[in-house]
Image (cartoon, rainbow, N blue to C red; front, side):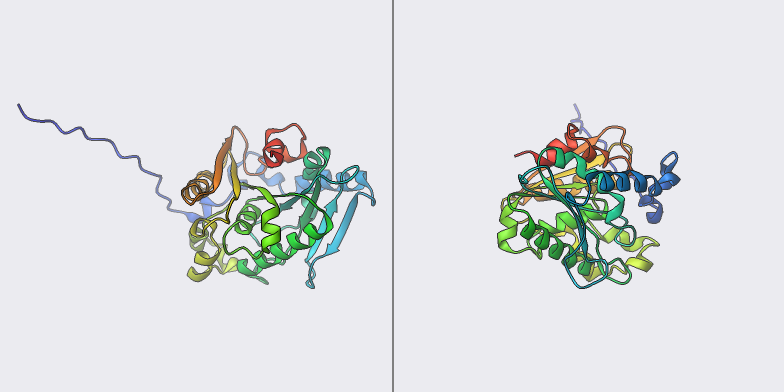
Length: 285
C-alpha cells in the first residue's frame, strides 16, 4: 500500500501590478470625489461652536509656518491628552479638516491637540517625524495626565513612529503614553517607493528602513491598536495587520481591528461620536 502525502493548498496573497493604484483611495469609493472637501464644513462648524475659550487655534510648537497646533479643551480640568495626526500621504491637507473628530474624546473629558506639519517635498518623512515629536512635546506641556495618540493614514504612520524605539519623544513623555491607535496606517514605507507619488515623497531605501514602524522595535510597555475599514483597499488592510503582528512578536500589547463597511474616508468618523467603539477603544484604560 502506497503511503499518500497530504498536500495543503498554499494561501497566496494577491500580486500587485500597479502600486500607485493600490494606494489610491478616492477612485475606489463611490462618490469618493467628495473628499476632502466634505470634511471642511463640519470641522469649521465645530471650531466655531466651541468658541475661543475652548478652541485655542494656531499655537506655535516650532519656527516653521506649519508648526501649529489647535488645542480643544473639555469642560473642566482635562483628564488627559489625545493627539490626532492628520493624513494626506505626508504631502497634503492640514489640521483644519479634522476638528470635529475631537468631539468624542472631549465628551469624555480629554483635551485634544491637532498639529499641522511641513509637507513633502519641502520636508522629508524623517523631518515630519521630528516635527510631530515636537508638536506632541509642546501639547504635553499644556495638558497634564496620560496621553493617547491617534492618526489617520500617514498620520497613523506618524503616531506609530512615536511609539517606536527611535521615537523623538523624551522618556518622560513616552511613559505618559497610555495607548496608540493607528487608523488605516501606512506602517511599511517600502511599497510606496514603487508609486508615482514617490516623486514628491522622495523615499529612498535608507529612509524606508529608518522610518517604517514595522522595521523598528516598539518602546517598552506600549499598547497599540491598528484599526482599518473593511471596505478599504487591500493594501491598507494588509498594512494594518502587519504592524500589530510584528510588534506582538516584539513584546508589545497589540490588537488589529477591521471595522465593517467603513472605507478610507469614513473610518475616522467614529472619533466624533463619544459612544462609538473607536472613541472608547482609544480612551480605554
